[in-house]
Image (cartoon, rainbow, N blue to C red; front, side, top):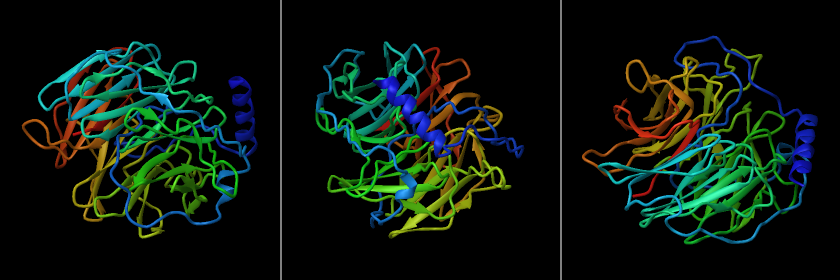
Length: 422
């Protein structure tokens, strides 16, 4: 059945022009072309999405006429403790995965405690803070089955199936509060949430009361809005859309005018209440092709898309997190295979900067989460990345510089995710 859904979904996406790999840019070596999409790096958990809704009507053309059948999935347990190792209360947790192995890590402000995951993944993981000292993670197994686990004060729990009838071959995305979204093998968007000890829903279709289930060529970004959540995703027409779940019901999708996108966008909440969208521009006929673009939402209106900087571009998925004082940081892999970032402060973007001089080489895309106050010094952000040797690393943003990366171990890894849970 899963194979039949995959074939059907691929045919549907091809018919609607979902697009393929991006072309090259040939610009500044601080970022740029990255070859085929590797779907690594999920991005960390975000803050509360700002005031105002995104529940605009219309936009059904964004999501196309795909299947409107909802596979809601049942509630499943979180799994017992001790299945993948122990650890004490942590400020930051991270997970790294590769095709046949993985690594779980927890930082208590002084040192990292790591344990083998015991299995691999078909793509990257996602991890989200749930409550103080707790997190939940989701990743697709090599066969596409979605796997889940939780971190509590007792350490990492055991890994188990999510219970979704739909598999995935691309990374899920996560937001603080235990909110997840994933793109099914059928190219349809789904939502899952983790509460105290259960996943409910485990497989909710992103389906408004009037219209078809949303779908597209790549996973969605996600952020929370109090008790609501909003996702942002590429439509098969190449435009960027947002869609909000309010009161347990998905509203209609709304287009961000002037946007062109293929890769997963990053959606975060700024500390002052606005929302910030960043994405890789997919417009081969434009000089801004592969540039990282942004739009800021104030109230219910998104600003006109603009490039961050002519030297900030990539063909790999990006990640972002909010910083204090309405700030943000975007992290990405450059054309030279190194990790870079660019900081947003006072309504303006700074220049891109790397992790060290020269910046470190990375496999896949880096991931980022809000800074923790644990340890000897508070940080603005926490980044994880997979080094050139396939091992997991962590670094902290202090102002406009990243700390010296710390290796946590692992081998054969290709992607990671990180969350702050203090």
